[in-house]
Length: 334
Ligand code: ATP
Image (cartoon, rainbow, N blue to C red):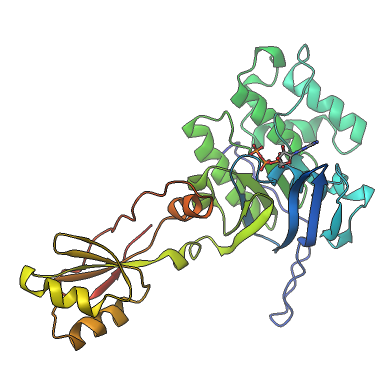
């Protein structure tokens, strides 16, 4: 992992199975207007403890503005928000949260370690040992004693991450944290976030990297032009875009087209793409028309395809992972 250490969070985990745990982040109708631009538009969100929660959206969607509001750096124009049960604005919240927003800013003529020791001293949340510990977690040991002006972007990101981890926060709020990391760094970073959550911490991480969210997050919200367009467990995002692909023998093509006409999206040779999520119902319609399919596959779009369609991008055609070849139904996808 990024750094070898693990940490324990001091948050009390309820042993009760009855009451749902209080959300770590909650927004109700949160909005922010900059002049004519409605950057965040009535956002409702809940992030539970121990989750790695993805905040996904294209450029200009309102991710950074939301995060700045959650950290008390920008005043909302409307709505309400709570972090760790404290309603914003609350000056104590920023000190409780480990955060990294956009490109971290450091004094370039000082080493990474000296920067963090300075920040730690100013905020009184970290002594030298705490800084060293956080540098280890962030995988920044090997270059922490070089001047920041000699760093690559990825190195600056790791120092920024160490800054966020100082003082063992219970909540990490990270804005596009993998920018500048190489593939190995991204992999280590994922492990770090998972380890952080496994130890009881909560992560709210923004990204436009869909694969990143699919790999590391439990739940995700998709935000487009300031509005929430989809929210849920990562594994179920995109279920609404499910289709069924049917392969028939040439003599059955016309009958199959007639039977599936109400849902039919496309026909390619003897393959029919059906805009309906239930393979069982598609199969029943075929059987009712006396057609035995060669294969029926449920094709679930990846989060990336779903994201592109939600954001009006050009989504590639869903790609089936395979068929059972025997007229049964198989869910393709991730
Ligand atoms: P990116 O992925 O490109 O960082 P984002 O999802 O973080 O984008 P924001 O930075 O929150 O998006 O911006 C949302 C909208 O608000 C954009 O239209 C942006 O131009 C606008 N905006 C952000 N900050 C300001 C500001 N201080 N003044 C005016 N407009 C702003």
